[in-house]
Image (cartoon, rainbow, N blue to C red; front, side, top):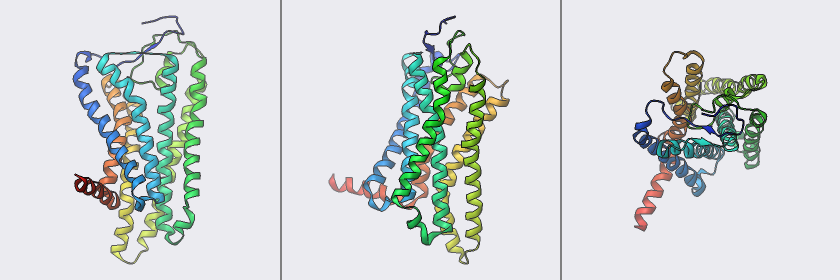
Length: 312
């Protein structure tokens, strides 16, 4: 532990009290990380390689896969470093950079899910104009807006971390750096860094979720007006994968928020576990959901396997 030192490195923390079991704990973590990389990497390869998937829906899915890979590759080095090598030290610059990308990618994921909701809204509520509304250039513009909103919105938070002196304990509570974790160690006025995240969450995550909900209310209204029951089921089926991904993302967000807000008497290991669930569960589940629920993805996977068998 370092006291009264603003330059001393931060110390990451694994699972307190379970340090001897870190090697065993690392096994499921490694399996999950490998599955996330394999699943999302395969999805990206499939979308790039299969011309039948060169549509707005799958372009947005590719953005989601890139975001999930980004979260995984941002947290993986320090998580596995602590669990495998007990390498706990991290410099201020590395810590702030990691925090920046973690929070940026979280905002970006919310934005991508919103863009995907817009895609489904146009496809079902205005199908005749779908291709003229969601042109390649418009999809690119939507992607740029999603990325820029995420990257620019987090800058004020992380930039201020560079200016603060850190004279408390330099021990962080996770195996990766989070803004809310680092800010507790600062010996300065952190009012802005407490208020800004609340405003940011309200204007991004909360607003995004409300718009997504409203879009699906309009989608359901449109679907209920379709005379054929078979056509109604077909229209709703195109939304199932996206709805599942939205639920996976926002349920983990709500769970983590509730634990941090009301779980003061909950064991610390539960707080830590919920943080890992938040960062690992959506990237793990998203490619599985789309592989199981989307026929075009299934057909693409089968084509790849049949091609490999033919070559072999």
